[in-house]
Length: 238
Image 1: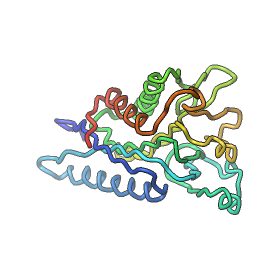
Image 2: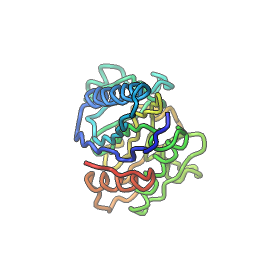
Image 3: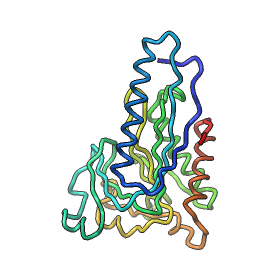
Image 4: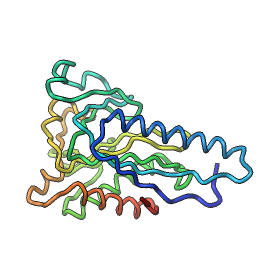
């Protein structure tokens, strides 16, 4: 399906600090509604505009395992998880295991890519570029590590470290899941997993890279939205 007038507006939804499962359920609801509308448009004389959403939030401590991951990369049993105060979910995104926690910016774009471009690899690169441009605003040089998604610091060195993890799902060109940018979160939680299934690479955060910078989640969120608008040629609305 192609649209005579693609909808480049993206509705911004702030979910705040929200339980991972609650956010996942909300994503699934919006995803199902969007796919249903696209299917209905096939029979419609005048197709309805297909909406896009940008969900931003933080999560209480949680570990999530993607479809291509292995449970051995979680180094805790159920009792240890409970003692740590963390939860664990196997989910339907790509990628391996990662951690979410307070102070980490989690962004779930639910986009109909037919409003933008029908290329999932370009979509991933544009998400990465959005984060790279945000980091540059704080004097942090982010880049890509060949063969891996996400955003890295010093990717070409022995000290390569990941600052932003990424895992998405796309069906009928509708996306869900997204990115997790480490801002001021507690990196100690990552020692209980093999992050993204990569045993020989470290994890970092914006606070660790620029320890004297006054970082706030509100400012970082606004900067992400601005960089997203430019990279996707979109209009984010509240």
